Length: 301
Image (cartoon, rainbow, N blue to C red; front, side, top):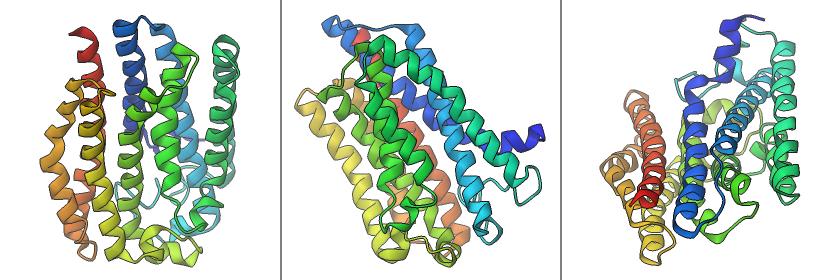
């Protein structure tokens, strides 16, 4: 097993998203500890974020395994944002090595889950079970259900934020859920936009993503609506005092959002669409980072 193959299949740059989600969940807990005296433990924040990173790596590896086994990764036009990592098709890893690496990552995070369950309560178990099912079922089953984009929005949006919050407080709160919803919209859209270049290849393995089921134009409309929802949600939550006013910093990404919305309809012009995919990654990461910064600043001031 080559080290380069491990780094490639894990898709390290993609883990930045998970790092930000861990910080966001911890940021919400820290903000509430400063305002209301609820529990916060920096060591728990670091351990939970590390566990999230390993879990996300497992997701990427299992996706590579299933897509290579089905032959999909040998058909797609690979871009920096879609089409898989290329670790198995290029020979950096064998199919069996990818499978065992994914299993190893999954086994590695089990003790972390057990620790937090014993420390903070059994209510963490349902979240861990749902997360596990999403990891295992996403590629072989969920992607063939007709609207799979909800799964990344839940598994790489809501659940990490709620879990990173739970390890401090031992409970799920409405405020934590509200804080996690922009992540749902953004991660949903991250996967949605990245599916456009893979439509033809995905059809051959019977995937049913939104661009396939709705058509690319209607899928671009859905993408645009979800992007708008991010900002409406944040503004509404601040007005209702569910999120601190500093989270309005996320509105600074509106110019990027407008560019991405316009560009999402250029799906048939790949030389123009690739920069749009890049801007969407920037939008997803920067918006959530600014929300997290808003909670931290809210706790300070």
